[in-house]
Length: 444
Ligand code: ADP
Image (cartoon, rainbow, N blue to C red):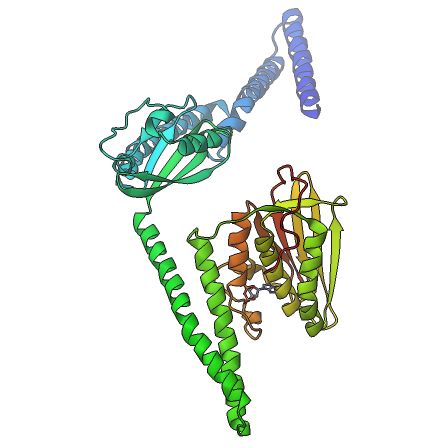
């Protein structure tokens, strides 16, 4: 508003002066003084008009030219040429990128396909054709169903069109492909689906060999370890010298650790190889919790830690799950919580069951887990630096993670150093549970 008032004032003064000057010239004849005044005012008005004309252009032009604003009409041609140069640069860059993209796509080992908004194939690279098999030629315009005949693939792509990325395995031409479907939304809203294809045949073969090796080794080692245990137990029963007795005890402790490790290893390889199948039954939540607490109570007493239970579920709640595996998950988390708790501390197991699902939480008051290590503790054999002094195999949480996934859920940790840790297991909602309870509380 002050700018507008300023301009209005200058115009008014100029008009008055011009009008007065003209009037005087007409009535009294032209004097040199009045003529000079008249021309000066005219010049001022023209100058101001030119500046005002340039102003609306100067701001956007300045932005386009990276900050150099034209201040007058004379500067406009220079600004215009700079703009043209900028435009030429842009065109050249775009043309280079247009040539670059097909070059990059052609050299990628990863297959890439792009389905457009109408679900038709818009782009693909040679690797995609190679991975999907040369016997089934790809062509622009093909529908999702023509490229992927399997229902899993079609469902995954539909899901990506709805905005959720997904991944699945596809067997083609004797190879195993990992396919990722990613919603393609360069302008904000989903306008297609981008697919990437990786040949993971060798990786999978290696993984299978690793799993078989671990499974065989852990199985083969069980017999000699049992023999060592029996021999060490026999030795302990003998009347031995003090140093020999200490050696026998040390053998027993090592055998215990080895037995634990072999048990965890064979359990993990069974889960990872898909050999472990859940056996869901309908059981009573209260009975399940009672049995779990009864199993953990002696360990809590030995660690001098209080074990508390908090239940948020309707009276008489029944769960449809594999009680043995659920028990295994919670026992693992509770054992860790007890192991890392300070003497006199408290470990709480909280469970919430409602129509949204089940949430199990195990909270402790231990040292917690540094943020940098939280992402790694679910990896097999990973043990946080601070935990190395405590007994353990580093496999418990890997087993927990796999079992939770097998049950259709997830496990996560929340922790701040020195403020304890909370492990949260989220399981999906129950299908309608049947009233009978064939299993009763689980037993190991
Ligand atoms: P471990 O046999 O070593 O306990 P896990 O797989 O159960 O193996 O746990 C992996 C690591 O995660 C542990 O070594 C420890 O560093 C960390 N961890 C697990 N639970 C807790 C906890 N409640 N408090 C602190 N650290 C924990």
